[in-house]
Image (tube, rainbow, N blue to C red; front, side):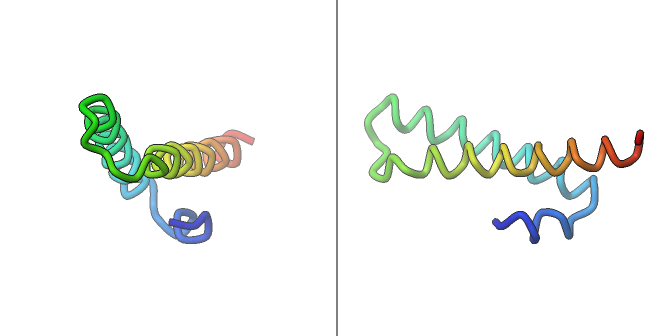
Length: 66
């Protein structure tokens, strides 16, 4: 998901997306530990997705307070 797509979501949808991404990261880490994960890049992609969402949430928070 690109930053422009994330910015088009409202706050509730962002919270839902972050919860889903964190759950996905948990599952990926579990699969990595049990050597069931084939594509190791998925972990990094999911971490970056979480970082993008958190960054946009922080931007909105700063705009509201600023």
